[in-house]
Length: 428
Ligand SMILES: [Zn+2]
Image (tube, rainbow, N blue to C red; front, side):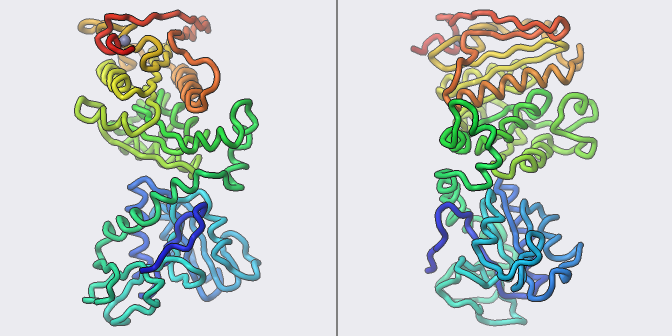
């Protein structure tokens, strides 16, 4: 078997060789799409022997971009297209440097340098792979090949993606986070300058994860700022689709997104802002069945829901899992924020013991909401999340912060733990 000779700080590189151009491109497009739906950042490089102009718009490399590849480049023996047209020679490290920040680089038809190769074989071209066995990671073929190496059918995209994922990507994620790349130092420079952050703090953020529940009015500023700050793994849960009436405040979405799942629309925007992070999406409504599993996957949970049931569920699940929960609520021109740290202060239920009866709870659909107010409250929640992850400053624990935007006054109310609270009363 071949072994991966890449340095740990580099993204895994897999080359697809053999077969005709169209066959490889089609296979690669499907692979890119699948890896993207699994939340990975994917780069592709198309290799040509001719001039850059050979890669005309609408074909080949452009198809990789259309399939969702985060970085796309064209390489020839005399240069590296779309990056540096006059380069004298092309090397694998050059490509990897350009592709920094992505999880995996798929090279189409690229034979130079040591990288694991997947060969596509079609019966009309060859009965045998052209790669040497020691550099061959897998063969994709409908032929009955007996090579002692993994063999996948031409349509078994999921099988190839599973192999790449298991073999390279998971380990790479851990390795990438040991030091900042040159590009990361530039991207996060103004974070790094802040007191108490530095490169170590930025690394900590990149190693952190946050779940944002709701991709609407509050979820938009929260997710945008957490993504931009470089929270390495961002989960987004929301079952809704984008409606025209959302666009007045839910700034993650645009006219073009109406009818799409909010989490899918959100992921496009967030990875465009920062391809350095991984966005995991859950087109689900929070329920008793899924809440514990979701909460357990993340370091911190940020509330951007629009209903009390979800909030109570999240509050309790976070207490049980020992995870911080940042409550935020907005309605009309008022908003509230509270940070809940299990065992250290009051929880959401301590303060709002019972859901108000009947129709006492108004919704934004009934009384309206100013988008900018959601922006303010969501930004405060994002700030609390980053502070918690960096272990900096004073959090809003036991301090319910309320905003009245009409008079533009903030009020801080000290709130106490309720020892008889059904959710946190038994915690130490
Ligand atoms: Zn409580």
